[in-house]
Length: 226
Image (cartoon, rainbow, N blue to C red):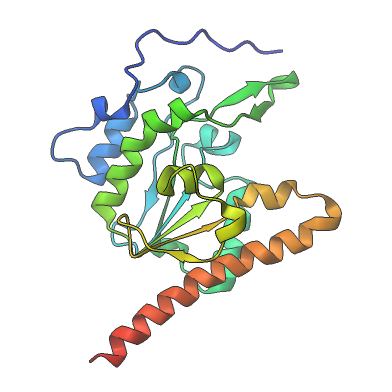
């Protein structure tokens, strides 16, 4: 079994220590490569920063990069990303016009046999340390809708009290955007048991369709006010 390297003693405790003056998205992306806010950088291949349109109306926020994202350096390019692409396509949301990112920018994992790496949920300190990157992305993009994919993202945005199971698919007012809409992470759909996977997929697609419906409703109101 592969061994993880020892945690670095130089972690500062917050990504805020690495945010450049007068940040732009390109500046943030470059600065995040050297982030030492927590120890996750020690074992990750690279930082995986957000990507997408700088004029995006919709920002999708996941938990953290997965194995393929860590290897390739881009968010949502593995199996979860393919399912997300399909859900967006069926809802009529053009992925080239959105922005995708994660609450945590490094892959946290447990090494297992034959070089495989098993995802491990980031802890509260790691999420808190990385949160300044996400807040700056939101501040610069000013999206109309933020879609929280999974509990980690939802709670990083809306607080630890928020329950995805009780509020999924519903627009929640927020000072971060006009609305935050939470759903499960697509990886949860892929992990569902065979007998439950079709329903989990249908519910996930329905939540993404709720995002599209919200955007259509906003545009209809603007057109009607002219």
